[in-house]
Length: 98
Image 1 (cartoon, rainbow, N blue to C red):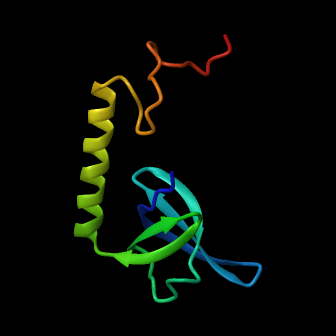
Image 2: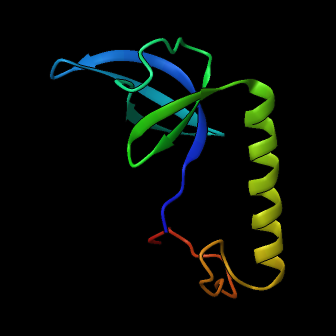
Image 3: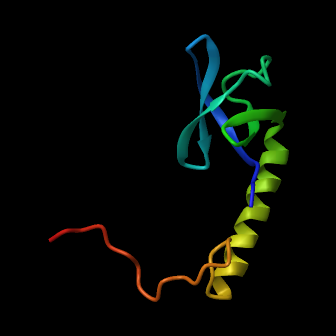
């Protein structure tokens, strides 16, 4: 399944001659190519698919999208699965090695 996810542009930089950006996805930051949205500015929201920012959206549209994702996540969790239909673990997974 392919998903296009909204996020807020927090940094613009160049890498290998391409315009790149750091995108904040509601607390998780990752990079995306900005070549398809050359007019985007820091602080604006964009929809990213497969590592490419493909459109610019306003803050209201981003908030609506986050609300829908939250509803999907809550609905899936109440059914005991994640957003992809995978069964949720009965207990939280710990990364502690002690």
